[in-house]
Length: 285
Image (cartoon, rainbow, N blue to C red; front, top):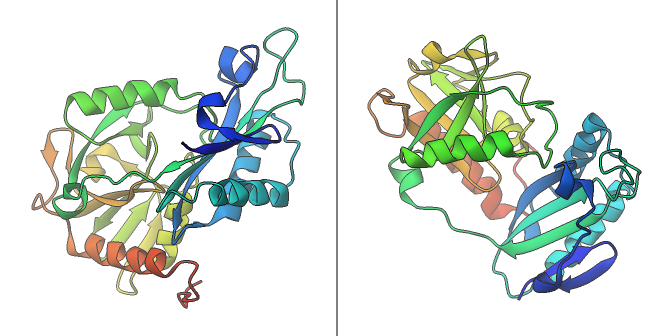
C-alpha cells in the first residue's frame, strides 16, 4: 500500500479523499507536476516545484506553501514509501472549495501522490515509436493545469492507431508539443525544438544542455511538412525520458530506425540519470 500526503496528513492511498465541492472536481481547476526518482532521489525536484508555482500563477491559483515546504513534503512522502525501488511522484494543488462552485477562494489542497515507477516497453527505445498529430492548441500552454480533456481525447486517438503520443499542431501548422511530451527534430547537423507556446519541460531543459558539440541548436517552430522531412525525431518527458520517433501519422521518418544522433543524446541522458544523487555530477551541470 502506498502512502500519500493530503492537506497536512500522510495517509494510505485507499483513504485519500478531497471534497466533492473542490473546484478541481467541479471545474477541472487546479495544477499539478510530475517527476520521477533515480537512485531513490527526486529528479530535479526544485525545478518541478518552481514550474508548479508558475502554473498556479498562470491560471490564478494561490498556493499556501513555499517552495521549500513543498520540496520537504515531497521528500518525506517518498521516504514513507520505502517499498518502491523507484517512484513516480505527482504533486497536485487543487482549486479548493468555492461557495459558487467556480470562484477560487485561496483554500486549495496540496496532494503528493507517490506510486511505483512504471517500466515502459523496451522496444520504444530500441526500435522507435509512432506518433500522430492533432489540430489542437492548448489554453495557457505554459501552465500544467489539471484540465486535460484535450490531452485525453488526443491520446485516445493515438492509441487507436498504435501510436504512443499525439502532438499538437496549431492553426498555422506549427508543431508545438505532445500531450505529455516535448518534441525535437534533427536535420543534418541541426537540432530544432519549439521556443514558445509550449510547456517548458524539465527533461527538455536537461536535453538542451546535453546536445553534442557537432549539433547546432535552433529554437524555432517547425511546420508539420518540415517535421515529416526530418532525419530524426524524438520526444521527451519525465516518465518517458527520450523516445525515438520513427513514424508520424502514416509517414515513416528517414530510414524508419532510431537515428544515431538521437541515440547519442539518449546515452548522455542515461549517464546523467544513472549518476544522479550519488556524488557523480556531470560537468555540464
